[in-house]
Image (cartoon, rainbow, N blue to C red):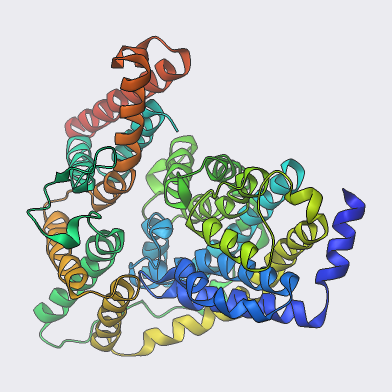
Length: 484
């Protein structure tokens, strides 16, 4: 394997390939910054262009896009509290407060280095190795308890999100569910409308109202910051080593399970880091460890999702599915025989991933101060541009004014939820994991005839007991805080 990997490095370390890797990373970051667009859209748009490139160069270019896209989404999450991608939603919980303290560059560098670290860990696992109902219920409960100060409101928001995810045609028998005859709802509510409206655009609307109340007074985006304090020291980064390793290998595990995705990995990484920390009260107030936990976890999914892709031909997520399309374009069939028939290309791809991680760190390191310069523009202009980008992010994947209308409707809902202290994050994750919850619930009933198996099978029972424990602990913590 070492000899094959060295041959892969020999194939990838040419000026042409390195330039395409760097171009891919820069493209991924640029698309990732745009709310709702992201690296996946860049992949979908640019895969046809790689038809004219050699296979090694094409795959290296696309790998660069996927790596840049995830960390790119962290930039608007940190700077304006509008995540570029759902996977970066948890990053905003500590990234934005840290930026508000006058340390936006430090926050972005922590996100970048954590992203690269998580990528490296999952790539190593990929090279070496070449979810049931109870698990999904546990994940939703943990997210609800983490994202909302009031567990009841968090669970209500999560349940509402799950309810909205059932709109559309029933996946089993094709029966319409709450579509009211609207053809555009047959495929369900758009994920982009849910992600961009409540998460990103409602935050912008809230800030616009703040500007309106100020009646034109000068509102600074960030305090005046000292450039010397923007540096992320090695000791600050290495102090989070436990969190980095925990999140990296959690993200790797999640990535190996098809369908779970980077968003869930990011939230679970953040949740576990907060629960394991000796100072959990610092989370949500600009804590570097919170940024590290999210970015290491969501970036680790990228390499791990290629394990089932290469081994079985099963895409771990949408990005992996698009990469399968790129493989097929270049005459490569993913699956059990891929390592035998195209071993040289596979190891060249592995080498490209490791080289891309290094290039990613360099490009992101020198690019982070550039994004801060945009914040010198007047607040009204910045927010107006973000609104336009949000609309574009919803319209590009599905060119329809109905999608724009849905985004605006959910923006209003998100604004109301913010004012009533309902967790938008819990609502979004409920919607995102709702189909998985329904599918696993049906599988459980079809296989066992009832839900009693949740309390008889050992693994399911453990997940359910942990779920109940999380609810009880959150309830006791809220009760203690109330009487304090």
